[in-house]
Structures are given as structure tokens and as C-alpha cells.
Length: 298
Length: 172
Image (cartoon, rainbow over all chains, first blue to last red; front, side, top):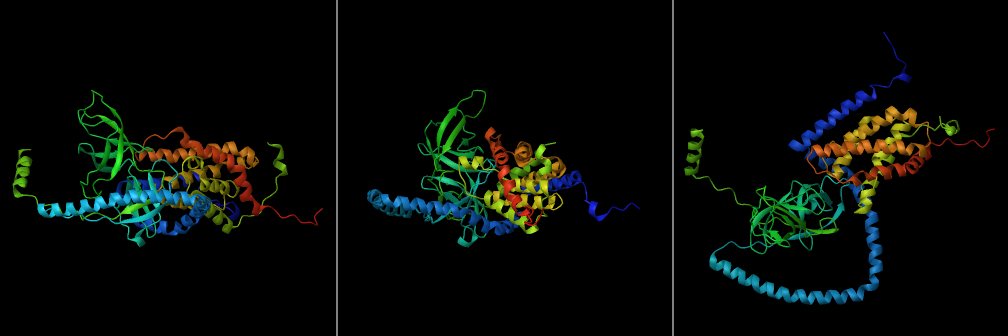
């Protein structure tokens, strides 16, 4: 029998090891991408690296404080500016209050459902991933602040994205520019409804499946339509940047740019979920019989 | 054979605690909340640390550790699980099979060869991302490999400090 001295024993060759681990990682990738079956494991690992992420964030906070110190010199000017803005907004707020009361009255008259008030939680962007494939960011609020998956994230100008994964102290936001992310929108000018999807690129959104003759122009503002119950209605999403009418295709190619600073801001707002989605109504028996007939005909 | 090969000192054995600490620090550097231009240039410090250890101490660091580091990186990056794990295993593989050749050179001469290894690892990430269904990135996606190669002498100097043999003042 051949014996190898302890000193020369090296285990399996690098090729064999690489093959094994490549197979393992491909298996993981398929399981994760197709069945997304590792959210528990993600949470535990996320918990372990949380202190590291906090530690890595310290330089940024220090920089912030230094900036604030410098900004202190311009405080009087800024206060004057803010006061001016405050008065402007106060005036608008009075009108809004009036309108809200009027709206409530009208709704009562019509017997329509009351609009729910939306609560918001402030959060900071903790980490932006390094590779350009995933358009996701990590926020510093999680389960402990009662954040739930599905909540909408906005900044002062418009929609940024939606929370897709919640860790105990962190949460992940899928940006609206992500390739697999869609938002129900309508054109603010004429109420034309559609669905806007991310192009997977920086600062680009696509409005798919609008027919060539749809009434849409360059510069149109797109706001959330509120259909689907996830996004509250009326939040600005994007502005139409470019429209291409290609006669050979059924749909126009409409490119838009997001209004919110999807990759500019540090502070964002997490909106609470709007009213719970009503359950699907029972299908009427008539409908099923039609389906049965159809299936029988096949 | 490079001239200064015989002037190299025999390094001491690396401490496991130092290897672990260096990986943790590299992860910390990877997690820095950078934005815009600097983010584009930021090299993958974990990949470079793994490469250093697999070139200089291939017996001490295995692919299992590289795989684990990759999984941690995947979670913090919120990418598909296994993407970075695969890339880091590829890096360790090249470190293992090339370590005898690479150790002939000093760290400045190693840098251009490190560039290709980092590029291959990035290409692995890129390919798996492409299979996952993303768009084709711009050419500057591969910048971090170049900055990584430029930073290689610095990193290998820093990681080599604790293994420097201590001079005996009474020696001849």
C-alpha cells in the first residue's frame, strides 16, 4: 500500500476542489434565483455582518458632522430661507386642510371610502452594492422599527422603490430602476394608465405596451395610479424623456427618467402600507361554466 | 529568474487569527458606503486578501473559507447567493496553481499578473449576472480590477508585515 508522509499530503487537487465548489455555487444560484429559498439564511448572515456595516458607516457620519460644522457659518442665511419656505408651505397647508375637509364632506355625500392617512418613517441609506447588476440599496431601519416587506420608499421628490427584504435592523430596497420592478402609473396630464418598469440601468425607466397612437408626449409627468394597492396614488415617479415610434412594432418605445434622486439621496422616507388589499371576490358560477364550456370545447 | 529572488527573506508562518482579521478588515473596506465615481473605482478588497493568502500560504487557506467569504459578500451585496462565492473560489484556485511562479517575483512585478486573475474573477461575476438576466454593463465595469492591480503592492506589503522575520541583533 502506498503511504504518503504527513508533510506532503495536500488533499484533493485544486482542480477537483474548484469543480466541487463551482457546482455547489451554481446549485445555490439556481436555488436562490428560481425558488428564493434562502431568506432565513440571508437574515442570519445579515445579522452577523450588521456590526461591520455600522462600523463602515462611521466615516460617512464623521464627514457629515464636519460638513455641518462648516455649514454652521451659513446658518442665518439658511434660517431666513427656511422661514420663507415655511410661510409659503403654511399657506399651501391651509388650502390643503380646507380641501381635505371638503373632500371628506364630498366623500360622505357620495358614500365613498375614506382615504387613509399615510405615516412615514425616516431612514438612511447605509450601503449601495458594488456591482451594477442589482439595483438595490440597504437602509438602516428594519424589523425593529416595524418595517415590512412591500412598503414604499420615497424621497422629497418622488418614488425611489419598494422594500423587498427585511432584516432585524436593516432592510433592502429594490429601486424602481431594477429590471424586475414595475410600478402602476398614470399620465398626470390626461390620466392615461400604464405600468412602468425599470430598465436595469442607471436612471432609466421603460413604459412598455403603450400603443403607438397613445396620447403621450415628451416631458409628461407620470404619477402612481394607486391601482394594485401598494403605491398610494399621486406620487411622482418619472418624466417622459424620449418616444420612438417604430412602424414595424406594435408598441411605442418610451424611455423615462425617474424624478426622485434614486442614487443621489442619503435620507429617504418609508411609507406605511396603505389600506389592506381587499380579498378577491368569489368568482361567479356563470363564469366557471363558461370556462368549463371552453375547456370542453378544447 | 528575477535578480532579487535570492535576496528574499523566508517569511514566518502566518497566524490564523491574523488571516481572519485581515479578511474581516477587507470586508469592512468593501462595505464602505461610497457613491458615484469612487464606487466605480473601488477594488474588491476581500478578493485581493484571499489572493494574497492563497499565493503566500496556500496550505493555510482553503476554498471553503473563500466560499464562505463569498456568501457573506453576496448577502451584504444583496446579489444572487453564490455569485461572489464562485468568483472567490476561482481566485483561490488561480492562487493555488500559480503560487510557485508568482512568488518568484516581487509585488510590483506581480501586479500585472494579479490584474488578469482579478479580471477573470470579475468576469465570472459578470457571466453569472448575465445568466441571471441583466443588461450588458459598460466597459468601466472592469475598472476595479485595474485599481486592484495598482493597489496590490500596498496590500501585499501591509499583509506581509507580521510575517517579517525578526532580526537578531547579535547575528553575524
